[in-house]
Image (cartoon, rainbow, N blue to C red):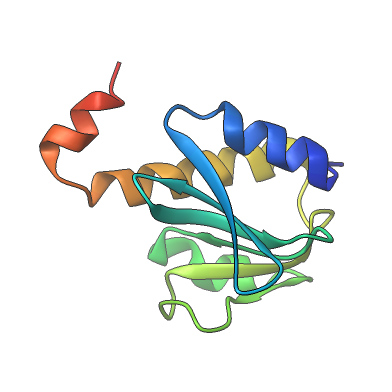
Length: 114
């Protein structure tokens, strides 16, 4: 399982990732100032983008729901870092980052390709 430090280290290992604390206690990881994953500083209430086609399947799992105050059916919320095995969590964080990156201008995307 992943703890908050392992989560932080993994997120920062992704190219172009920056971090910031927003809204009092949300540790946000961003690419080009666009959030792709965030967690409370205690390691709970994790939120990340997901493929809308996987949304229903994901929220059917224990500890996963629609992320509060984020785009409906596009962001999931995890009760804590232990809801998913570490390997799946890393994969989904990387996918969330890619979904955010894919919406940025081509010139920006090219900085992070290859």
